[in-house]
Image (cartoon, rainbow, N blue to C red; front, side):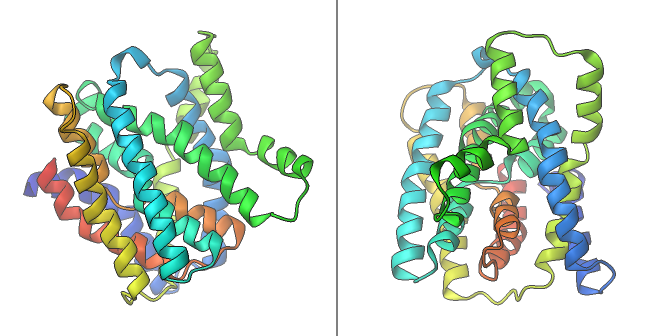
Length: 300
C-alpha cells in the first residue's frame, strides 16, 4: 500500500499540490492559471482524447460492467442534484456541477495514469473502459448541458453553433467516427497529438491547484455532503451493482478503484470556463483529492 501511494499515486497528485502551494505563495496567479486551464481544456485535451477514442478496441471491454457503472452514475447524479438544488439551495448550474462532481471521477487525468503505472496497459483495460465511457459520453453530456444551462437565453441555432464548435466535442466525434469506420489516422498526426496530449493532465492539474488555492477549504455543509456522496456513497453503490452478474475479478476491483477516485477536475474546469460560482466546488475537489489518496492506495 505504501509503495503504491509513494511511487504511483503521489507523483500524479504532486502537480495539483504544486499548483496549490505556488498559488498560495503568490508565485502564480489565478489569471495565469485560468489561461492555462483554458488552453489545456480547448487545445491539449482534444489531442489526448482523440487517439484514445480512435484506437479503442471495444471487444476488449466488459460492456455489462460499464453499463452497471453508468447506471450508478445516473442514480447518484439525479439524487445529488436534488440534494444540492432543493435541500442545499444552490443555484441550478452550480448544483448541476456539484452533482457532476459526485459521479464524474478524475479518471482521464488521474486514475488512468495511476493505473498504468501500477498495472500496465493490458492490466488496466477496465480503467480504460471507464475512461472511454467518461471521455466520450459522460463528459460530452456535461459539456453540452452545462453550456445550455448557462446560455438559457440563446436560441437553439446559437446553442447548436456553440456546441458544434467545441474542440473537445469535435475530437470525441472524430475519434468515434474514425474508430467505427476504421479510418487510418496519419502517423505524423498521431505523433503530434501524443506530444500535445501528454501535457493535458499535468497542466490541468497544476492550473486547478493554483485556482483552488484562492478558495477557502472550510468544510461547509455543502462541501461535506457532496464529498461524502462522492467518497462513500458512489463506491458503495458501484460495489453493490457489481455483485450482479459474473465477470473477471480484476474488472470489479478496477471499477471500484475508479469509483473511489477524487471528483473530476473537469467539473471545476467547466465552472471556471463558464464563470459559474466555484467556492463550494473548489473545496470538494481538494478534499476528495486528499482523502482519496489512502483509499486508492488500499484498493490498488
